[in-house]
Length: 291
Length: 234
Image 1: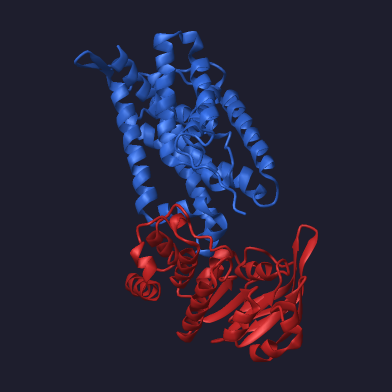
Image 2 (image 1 turned 120 degrees about the vertical axis):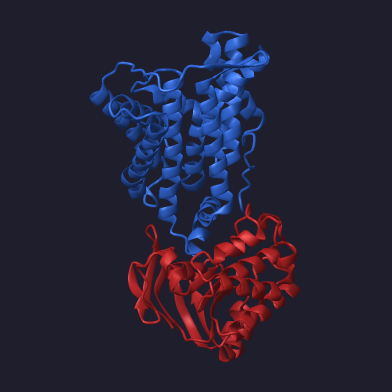
């Protein structure tokens, strides 16, 4: 029972982690909480659904299509709504702009798709595998595999490639990054592109797993993924992964052992306690101001 | 090589630089000295493109750069060792040096420059895998200099390399600056430590509250009563 719940928690948590990565990477570079990120995730779920039902795509092409769409959407949002404000106005203006984009994107979806919850048709065989006493559905396996692949890929990219190094440098010291000859605007675009693609992948998989796609699905998940990023230490990539999986496990355990009506209260309650004890988050760095 | 003509720079409504003009000739070490808050760092940041002048022009090798983005200016051959070193603290010494060569594609050239940096700063080679944030102040200064050299600049801008370092280390850093210059790199050095700066420079400018108040060959300024009184405590 416990192991089964742990497995379910890790599955849910790995989708939170995919979305939390976008929050943390963007925050790490431009110190902006991109409130429109949850809506990018929602668009991922919706575009995936569209590709499966209207265009007749199977899972993998639909997943890739949704990721590409979200990538472009994320880059566009940054260009239109955040870049013009950068350096010219306070961080608060960019934050308000982000809230505006979030409302715009969800109401736009409401307008074109209507308020009803839509469902994915059967895109994967609903097989359930048994490993000892553990049950694992094929969709769970897909979520775990895809999330693991994407996160390993992201880590390799950040640690090993020239662009990944430039991303790290920019997030450590934007001005010094300019002095290395790094095209900082391009790195910021790239960060939005990667974060949004990951959120898009999360959207498709959650849409299938929970079988529900609707215009406001990004609000709660966005909030949770953001909390996961803060829990792990905002700005830290491994932190977002750890924070997402931790939050997923907490939520599922709360449902399993206490009550499903308290699930969000339990998850966020624990989040508050962790932050009271460790304000910088699990893997976050203590912020020490230079004198 | 570098020509700054009558630039005005503002922070919001506060004017930090007033009609600053200066020239850096190829092969020279030119220094800009002055007290804290006089506008030394502002001048350097404006040359590297991190700040924009409201009026005036900056030209490098005959090309106007006052509206060029900072990353492109690096590509044109100007590197900066910023004030307070500004190494990337959570990246290793090696990664920091590689970031210095970000715009370069000549692998062999990068390797040979890397070796040259290690010859000059053996301490860095001992610590290639260490996070830059864990280095001492002097080592970080060496890393910041090595990192800037990895871009193989024609003009090296240095912002207060002596800041916060022990006197013995300051001497070492200035010896290295002279050496870098002797290998053909032109240097524009901003310093509060007027005596040290004047002792290695060819030409010098003195800045006070955003204005150039004095300029001349460094040898002349070192003996000038005015400079002695104001900046060398004598």
